[in-house]
Length: 427
Image 1 (cartoon, rainbow, N blue to C red):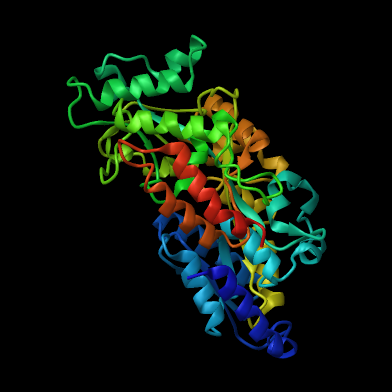
Image 2 (spheres, one colour):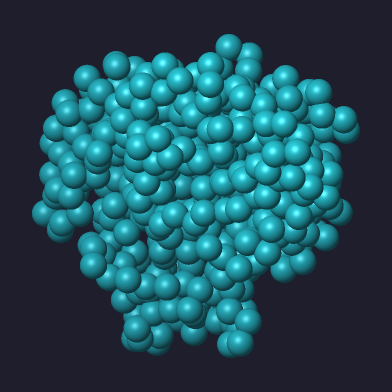
């Protein structure tokens, strides 16, 4: 499904009912049921969300907030289907890759005035670069409640068993580079000292979600399209070199599990994994291994960082947009942002310090918080996104299938992909 087209169609159809549905304010005595779609079913997440909802209901006794967990893999399609079917939620989480579609389509209610009017909200402390993708014409349309750096979790036990240096040792020696990472991953992936273990996992990639490979190719200064989003740059040398490096790591060095191979780092079955720091909650508690969290390694283009985001917005098609906007302001105020930051790193300046983050992330050391979390948020680029991303994502994913085989013609394949997505980028 092209959710960009679906979203635009839904918004256009619902515009006819706007005077009645979009801006209606319920009387104080009326019961208001707010529904927020999310993609997490994590018990710890839901416990915190419900606590925040209960806090809001204390001051708004007629308001009840419920959360609807939709499957991660089909989340955006399910959300846009609800909107098109006249069953829009009041609030919704939004992927960073879909941000442009939701912001530009008119599907979201502008939050800036509500946030600024909320006592003690301190809207000005939101880092401007973190808000950029969620802002249009000076107005914020979704609050980036999660601004989470990509980093590398490490299983030191597996690495030592393979006779390789740990990442901490490489960092101390000034050797934390992509070449050395793949050498270590290869020692695990094709060695007989730790049979059955994988080397490096780019979590959630699975040869489908190719944009997660930005956590690697950004080290080459590569990008799938130009900064203005209008020109395909997949065929340029940085991307060709980066994908050649990844291809060799998969098929020649056995450092990255190949297509169809499912390896779970958090089950203790791999040396390293690239993922967002919020995944620390997946670290095993019953049979723990010696783990570490380190920044992404240096690439040919130098040091870099990558962040993923999730925004929370109010649907224009909701029945209680004003109350929903008030709830979003409450959910993302300084106090609740601090609570959320134990799972979802905040883009509030006041919360980006080691003392605060240590309290909400007890598993992480002060050094990990400083070098991975704070530095990553301050300097990281957001994972690629674009208007009409679902169609672009599918075209690139299908095109890259030809890369994920041993005899791939990488430059030729990338030329074909550019031919397919070039017209889509200019829409």
